[in-house]
Length: 255
Image 1: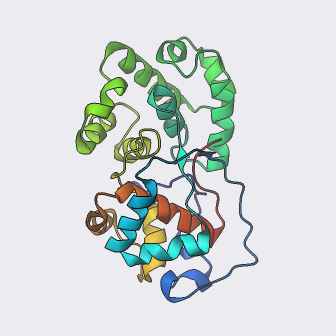
Image 2: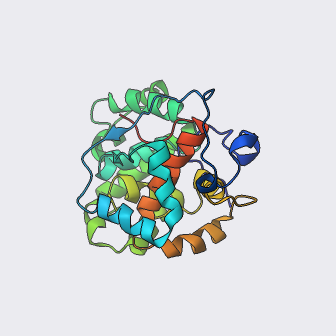
């Protein structure tokens, strides 16, 4: 399975992690004064009413999660815009660093009509290239825009779909896949029980949190996450929060 990173540098690997932090986090309180924490390029908003009760319930299901916020600070509510704009932002972040994705997003979002399907279809190749998009991503965004206009991509009805149905619907579109679909549902649609099991940063964070000898595979991560339902999205958010804290690598959503 292709390795996925959630807006982390592509060097994000347990092998490159300082040896001092690859042990069970809840068993050892660690400090890293030499780490340089990157600016958090994320949009922060007031969380939904289930946010704090959900975290408390998750910590009751798995007490290891209760160790994260005391060390890393309160978990902020990160979000992306709903609909086509949010999907565009997620696609732009595929397989590149957060810094690169943020720069491309800002240039692209400034183009007239770029965040609406009809407007995106009207952009020229030169406009896409000037924003920094690769040819495959240009093709993917045009395909998504066309699908949104002809009804193949039903972003306006995602809210009526169950999680699995929504993931399958998004992942069936050109340029998308399970990871992109899950991240979009988690951040743009604010679903509480979606877990991007193919995200390598989540696997690395969990291995560190629990003192595992190696990162769990996507299949193993999926099985472990079943015990966190119905709060798997909060588990993912906490794990990303934890990994950013212990590595100092920027993670998350754009401002």
